[in-house]
Every structure is written in structure tokens, then in C-alpha cells.
Amino acid sequence: MKRISLLLLLLLSVPDIFAQNTADTKPLTDSLTGFPLPEEMTPGMTEFWLPQPPQVTPDDAGSAPSDAIVLFDGTDLDAWRPESNFWTIENGLLKMPKKGSALATKENFGSVQMHIEWMVPAPEDGKECRQGNSGVFFQGRYELQILDMNGGKPTYANGMCGSIYKQQAPLANPMRGRGEWNEYDIIYNAPVFNSNGSYRVPPTITVIFNGVLVLNNAQIFGTTTYIGLPKVQPHGDAPIMLQRYSDTEDTVYFRNIWVRKL
Ligand code: MG
Image 1 (cartoon, rainbow, N blue to C red):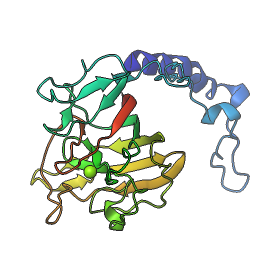
Image 2: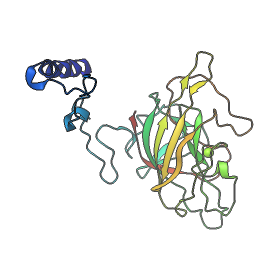
Image 3: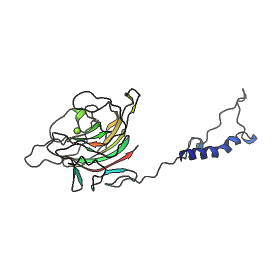
Image 4: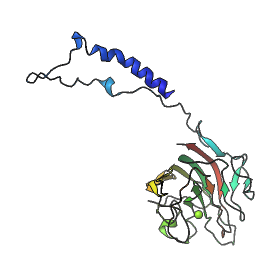
């Protein structure tokens, strides 16, 4: 389609090229040297019409744009690998379990735009307020942290909610209160590798957290491990994963998860 568009553009421009050689449109020349002067710019010279961007219907409240891949809309877990079978749907919400593994998409992804909403419920009466640790892993290895910051337990800045875990601290903390819904709008750019396995272009991420920019095209340095420095591991497209933190006593709920491939 692109080739056809380019060919059409070239064919349409041919008469203009010939027109420059006619007597009527003889190029202006410099009066001293006789050399031709640049043609005067017209508005059309800096406009391109093809290809036109595809039409996308924007999301209304609680739904995804028309070209999005819906990962969870409250009805089923079909987009996710069945081996993560402790994750359940409760009243239309995706519930992080107290045991089992991370929830991984069936499909592999590289660069994406992603929307996800999540909430850490208020603790039951008399129970300790835990931090509802989860996270979104891009390409199966780079964690954007999800962690409740309202429980009164401080944590290191580069492990706060909205951080790239142990690497990039968020620019702000716009978290809503316990039991309230939060949302991430994310642009994640996958890395490009050199032949020796190092990053030629490192992964980068932009995150808008409840409407506030918290990561601005931030560089990711490698894997996001709890202990140790980031590691650079060559990889291709891989699942998006939701973390199930091993020590958490409470849970995290998710809703309205979708991605658009970039
Ligand atoms: Mg986490």
C-alpha cells in the first residue's frame, strides 16, 4: 500500500518537473552570476497527504480505543496464560492471588501503549495495612512498580509506586487513597540490541499516573531485580506480566487493561 502511494505521488509530481522546463516557468537567475536561484517556496511544498493516519475511535469511559488489544475487560482471562491459574475474577475485577505465579499474556509484545487501572483495597478492621506490592513487567523483565504508598510504611524512592524498580524514581507521587482506583497510561519502547548483546537503543518508558507525568522517556538500564545491578539480556518480544509479590498478605485488584502495539 505504501509503495502504491509513493508511486502515485511520483507520477503526480512528474508534470510539475516538466513544467519547470517550459518557457513560462523558467527559473529565476541571479542577475550577477546568471546561476539559477532557488524556487520560491509554496505551502504545498511542505505538505504530504499520504499515507493518511488510520481512523481510531477513542475510548469512552471504561472502554478501549477501537484498535486496542483488550487484555482484561472484566469478563474473562482469555488473553492470559492458563498456568497462572490462581488469578481470579471477582465482581468483574481481576484479583491478584496470595499464591502462585505472575500473570503473563499469551501474546508476546514489544513496544506498546498500555492502559491499566488498579486498586489496593483498604485493610479489614484490625488487620495490618500491607503495601499491595505488584507491578507491570514489560517484555517479561522490566518492572514498573505498583505499590500502595498510603500505608504509612516509607520505602526507597526508586522502589516507590511509579518507579522502574530499583532504577528510576517517579517524578511525583500522585497516588489516590486506599481503596481508590489508580491508573497508568504508559508508552514503552522496546530496546534494540547490538550483535554482542548490548543495547544499541535501550528500552525507555513514559508513564502518566493518574494524569500526572511520573516517568518522562526514562531509560531502563536492564533487568529490575531486588538484589544486584541491572543485567542486559538480549531478547525479543515477550509477554507482559503482572507481578504477584511473594510476601504480600493483601491483594491488588485490576480492571480495564488494554494495549496498542507501536
Ligand atoms: Mg512490585
